[in-house]
Length: 89
Image (cartoon, rainbow, N blue to C red):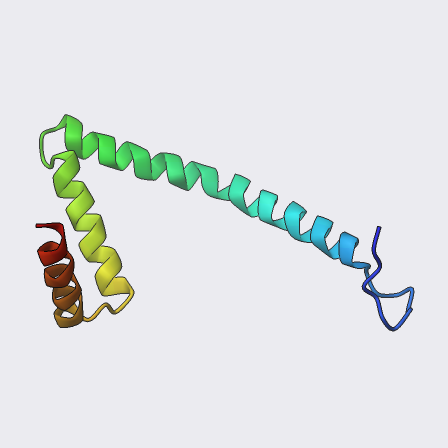
């Protein structure tokens, strides 16, 4: 076990304790998120089951949503798309 506590102060957590605490917190967050993930899956399934959208429609809508959310430059994306498209052909 490596102690990265350079100050030697017993009041500070060791590196391993910080890692363990981080993992515990991450696990709790992921567990709390699970109902929302299930709700998201149910929403997608509902739209597909009712014939409102196809899996492909949903996939494209999600990609568009993420592009807008990430503030993606559509012109730059098209430049990359066209470059990749010419390489693939």
